[in-house]
Length: 280
Image 1 (tube, rainbow, N blue to C red):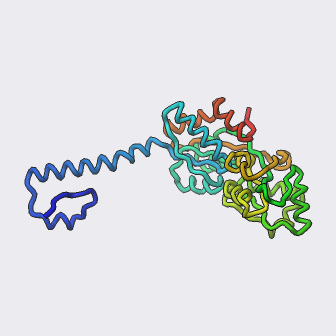
Image 2: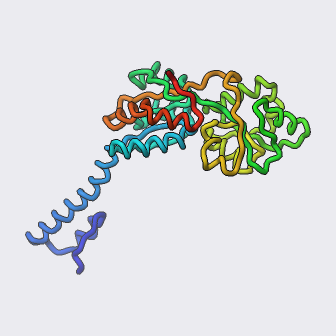
Image 3: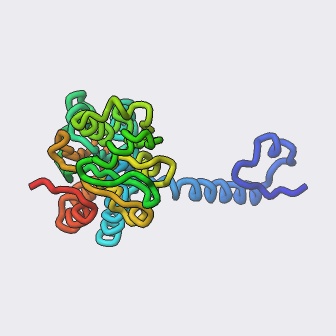
C-alpha cells in the first residue's frame, strides 16, 4: 500500500495502514511540520499587510499613491473600495480594517462618537462633482446642467446615474445639486443608483445610461476619460465634501506609516492630479 501522505489526508485513511515504525514516524513528523510551515507562511505575511477601507471615488488616486508607498518604503497595503456608509456598518461590527478613508467627514465623526475609533482623524482631500456622459450620448454636458434640462424637457432622457444617496456621500451631494436646480423630482423615473460612486460612474460612462453625476476624480481617470467627456460642477452647489481618514485601534505600524504618507507632498500632488482640493 502506498504510504505517501499529503496535507489534508483523512484520519480514516491512516487507520488502514499497519503500525508505524520509528523511521516512518519521523517522516510523518517532518511532513506535518512542512505542512504547518506552508500554512503559516502566508498567514504571517497577510498579518503584515494591513486591510484598508477606502471610499470608491479615490480608487485611481489611492492605487497610485499605494504603489508609490510600496516603492518608497517596501511595505504593502491591501485596499478595499466601497461606499463610506457601508464601511461604517462593517467597522461597527468589528471589520478588521486598520485605516478608513471616508468620502465625507460625518462618517468619521459618527465612528468616533460611538467609540469605534480613538480620534476623529484628519481631512486628506476635498471632493468635487462632475456631470459626465459617453461621447456618443445625446446628453449635452455643461456646468449649469442646461443640456440635462433640455433632454428631459424633450422627453428624450432615458436613464441618468448617481450613487445611492442613502449611503454614498457623492450620491447625497448629487441629490443636493439636482434639488437646487429643481431637477430632482422630474428625474425620479430616470434615475439609476450605483451602490457606490464608482459603480455610478460605470453606469454613467459605459453607455448603459445617458450620463450621470459622479466624482470628478473618477471622470478624470484615464480609464473613463477615453470613452467619455465631463464638466466639473460648481462646489458651492452642494455642501462641502471634506474627505476624512482615521486609524482604527487595530492599526499596526504599516497602517500608521501609510496614514502619515497620505499627508506628504508626493501623495497630495497625486490627489491634485485627480481633481481633488487639498486641506491646508
